[in-house]
Image 1 (cartoon, rainbow, N blue to C red):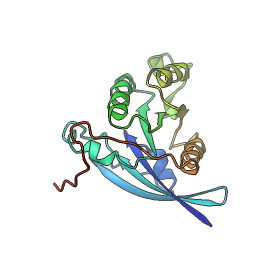
Image 2: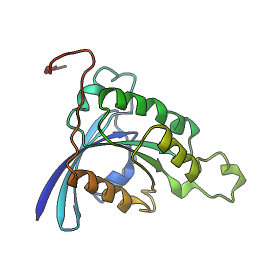
Image 3: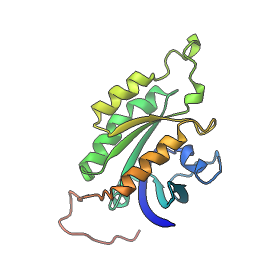
Image 4: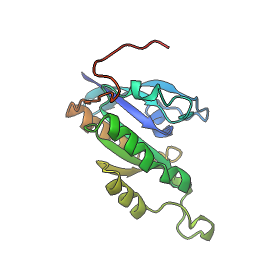
Length: 185
C-alpha cells in the first residue's frame, strides 16, 4: 500500500479528525499533536494534526513555529457559535500572514445541532453564510460536518487526500527573522 504523509494544522479542535481513529473524545487539551492513519483509494495517509487554537493567547509567539511544512490549514467553527464563526477572519489573516501559499479549508462543525425549523436556533450559521465566509477569507473550500453523526467526515478526508496527492508544501516565512532558527522553549 502506498503511503503519504500530510501535515494538517487545525484552528479549533476538530472531532471529525478523531473519527479517523475511531474515537470521539470530549477532552480538549490546550495544544496537541495527533497522529492518525487513514486509508483512501488504496493509499495510506499519515496525518500529523496540530490543534493550535485552544489557549491561543498563551501560545501566540509559539504558534507560528508550527506552521512550516504545513500542507493544509483547517479553520473550524461551530455553526452554533457566532463568536466562533466571526473569529475565522482573524485566523485566516494570521495564517495568510505567515503562510500565504498554504491552502485554507473552512469547516463548519456540529451540524447535527442545526434544525432550520427550530426558532430557538435561528442564530445558527447557515450554509450560505459559510460559503460567503469562505470567499471572504479566500479559503479553498467550505465543508460542513458532524462528528457525532459521522456526517461530512468523508468529505474532510477526501479533501485531505487531494492536498496530499498534490504535494502542496508551505512557503512560510517568519516575518521577523531572515534565516531559519531552532528555538527550544
